[in-house]
Amino acid sequence: MKLEAANKKLNSIIKKVEKDGVQAKKLVEDLKELRAFALEEQDPLVTKVLRLSYEFLTENNTFSVQAQYEEDEEENEYPLEIEDNENLLYLLNLLLRSDHKINREEIKDYRSALKLELY
Image (cartoon, rainbow, N blue to C red; front, side, top):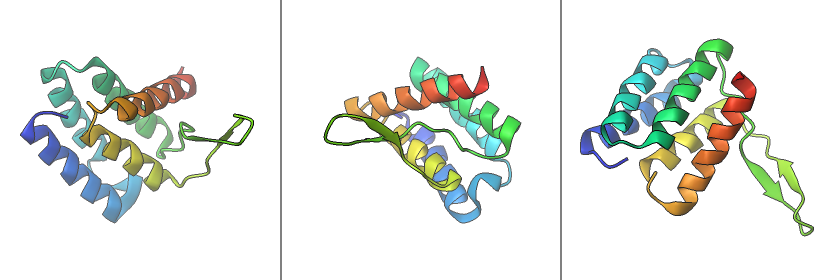
C-alpha cells in the first residue's frame, strides 16, 4: 500500500494476527478500515481482496483459503498446507508491497481462491 497511514494500519493488523491469530478482536473491522485506504489509493485489486477476506472470515471464522501452490519438475501444482494464521499473515505481508509485480500476482491468486470459496 502507498499511504503511510495505510501501512501503519496494516502493520498493526499484522501484529494483532501474529499475537492472537484469526480470532483477534476487531479483525474484520480492522480489515474494513484498511479497505477504506485501498479505496482512497484507487487500487481495485487490494480493495476487492480485503473485502473478500473479511467476508470469508465472517462466514467461516477461519482463513483456510487455498491460494498457495507448489510446482514440481513437471510443472504440476500442489496445494501447500498452511495454518490459517500463517495464510492470513502471508496475504497481509503481500499487501505491504502490493505494487510489486510478483506480489500482485499472488494477491490475484488469493482473490480468485476467495471468490471460488465464497461464491
